[in-house]
Image (tube, rainbow, N blue to C red; front, side):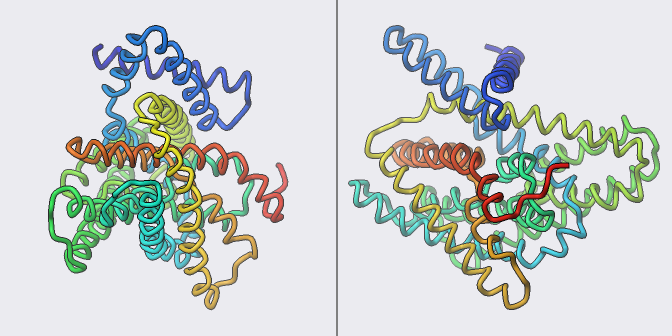
Length: 417
């Protein structure tokens, strides 16, 4: 199957599943599409019991998509840019202390806690997983998924300050998590030595360098936008920043996610105010909202279909269920510890911690990071994929569908307009 036919099939399935969700379930689009895709996958598994060729053909097709490449080097840049474009810089600045602490030290704490829990849980179930691989797992599962979180925020009627905290953390913490993941993966699977100094150099290069690069391309795009008053050209410039900027940052070994987030924040605030007309802003919002909806539907469709290539060994499933609790414990410690320190300087609503803990969704990025591990480590890669998929499924479906009820219970829901 050629690339055009493959894209056409994926878009068609995303449209059909979105329609079915709208007519039958009325769930948030991303969650509904993923659930239907998982049910569809189970139907194919059932058919495969009688017609193995059908299941094998479906698996081959899913593997052709290369989920990790599609997410990390395809959709992620546009989705992060679309999310950052609508974050108010003034609101983010007010929450900068909380966001920066959770997105950095919070991730490190979670990586350590989850890695330790994974080591003991896997050993209890008979898996001999090296310590370094346990921390690799901690690194790929600890950052909250910005795509899943931003999709969730559309359904929530949360106060602006809480929305900014959740969105800000999710937009930046994956950059930190990916840096840790890359460093630990080099040690675990390529025999590289990793010292604290080398990890800090990697962090400065990827994260700090990515932020500087994002500001530079955002500034360059801003200067271009000020010299035109044509919304078609302006939208094309924004698309170039999201896609071209992400690709160039990656090629330069900088953090593409952080680069496009910084550029999106810059253009979404200074660009709107000083470089674009009201008409351009309106068209820009409509365009990126549409891109966001389409890519999210495709991403969660693929996430649901990945069920076909997950090896659901009984012990691995049990480990995944145990690690749901382990990841929530890691999230609890990584949120409560920074908040306990920060409350000396900031005041927080009593329910802030619970919302941040339960609203820290894991999603497609974690699955993509697992799939990016070398094929030479097939056994450990398969185990991590199964555990990650179980956690992600729980996170998106259970946490995603109950966070609004928790908001209401904590009296943090704004009245409907």
